[in-house]
Length: 87
Image 1 (cartoon, rainbow, N blue to C red):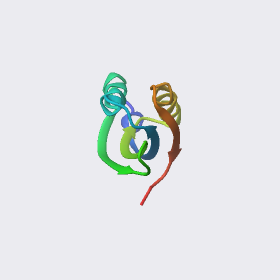
Image 2 (image 1 turned 120 degrees about the vertical axis):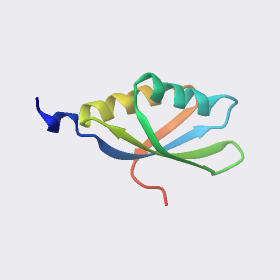
Image 3 (image 1 turned 180 degrees about the vertical axis):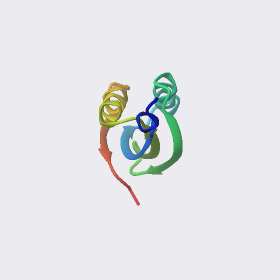
């Protein structure tokens, strides 16, 4: 048994979305479906129609991270995703 293969890494994402009813639950559903632990979530209104969602997630490795980002990009209303802190 290799303990190190079970290590999880924290990643911070900034997701720019167009505000629409249900988009936050769609994003959370993607994370839940992929069995991704959501460690933190914040939302900031950038304009009347855009919201920046800052999330901290745990992922297994770089490939897992990229697959999470790829799935999130496919959510209707997601404009862009960038890695890192938004503070």
